[in-house]
Image (cartoon, rainbow over all chains, first blue to last red; front, side):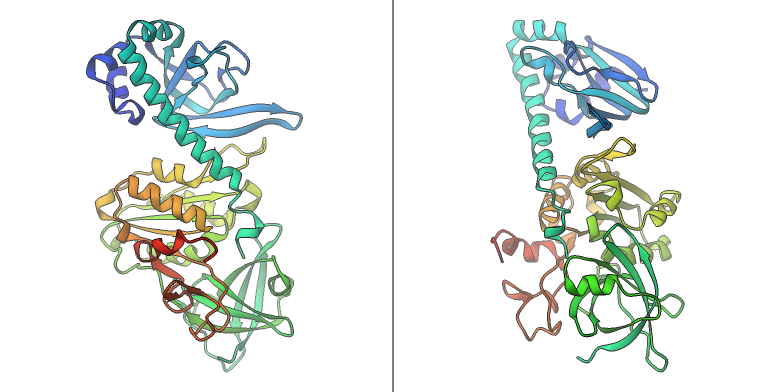
Length: 154
Length: 271
C-alpha cells in the first residue's frame, strides 16, 4: 500500500502542494478503516477531523422523518469534511461509510494551528479545499436544475 | 413518408411514466433496420406522430424496441397501447453512433435519464463485438432510483467482467445504497485512456454540455465526443424546418453529432 504522503501526492486536490507541505500534512494523517455503516462524522459535532478516501465510498447524510437522506456520495481520492476550516468548526452533515472503506484521517484541530503558523501551507490548503468546494457547488447547482425532470425530456 | 403499420408485440413499464414497446411489422411488411443512434417517427393513429429513439436494434431475431415517456397526448397514446394494437412507423432517419470509428480504443458512454434509451443499441453493438474495443465504460445518471431505465438489464451488465458500468442518482431515498450526485462524477472516476477514447453522450442538453466539459478536462479530444440531440422533428426529412439548429437539421445531420460541430449553437439560448 502507498504511504500517506504518496497517496496525498497522487490526490488531485493536493496537486499544488510542495513536497514539504505534503510531508507536513502527511504527518497529521493516520490510516483508518471503517466497516459498512460506520459514521466518520456526526452532524453538529466539533469538526476536528477531515478525511481523504483511499478505497470505498462515503455518503453525506442528514436525518429526516423518513430516514437518513443521502445528499452526495464521495469516492476514491475525495476529501470528506471542510467544516474544520471555518468557524464555528461544527460538522454540517453525517458522513457514513458505504461498504468497507479505507481512508486517511487528519487531525484538523492541530492542522488549523499549523496553518496559522505557516501561512504558505495555510494558503495552499485553503486553495485546495476551495477548488473542492467550487466543484461540489457546481455539482449541486446541476442537481438543483433537475435536468431529468419532465419538462426537459420528451 | 407514409407510416408503415406495426403491431405492438409487448409493452414493458420502465418507470411510472415510461414504457418500452416492442414492435413488429404486419405480415408482408419488411422489418426496418435501424442503426444504433437512428430514430423513427412513431404514429398513434388519430392522435399524431412524434420522433422516438430506437432503444432496441431491429434484427431478424429481435423486434424493434422504442422507449416512450408519456409527456403529451401522442406519447400518452403510445404508452397506453396494448399488445396487439397497431401503430405507424416511419424511418430509420438520421445519423448513427460512430461505432466503427471507435474500434480499437476505449468507449465511454454517458447517459442521463431517458438518454440511456438511444444508447442501448450502441451498448448492444459494442458488447456483440466486444473484441474490437478496449475498455467499455457506461456512466448512467438518473433523477432517482425509481426513474432508472432497463433495471434488469443494468443488473446483467453489472455482472459482466468486460464492461464497467456505474449508476448515480440526483435524489436518493433511504433505500438507495448506490452513488448520489451528478453523472459527471462518474466520468471523473472512470478509468480510461483519454488518448484513445470515443465518448458517446445522450441526455438533457445541460448534462451534455457538462459531460463534454468533464471529458475534455479528462483529456478526451472534443472531436471524439459525440452527442445525440433532441429537437422537435416533424417531417424527419429536412423539409419542414422544425428541427433546424443553426445551419443543421437535426433530423438529417443528427440526432448523433460530433460535439465540436454543434457546440457553438448549444450556447445560444432558445435555439
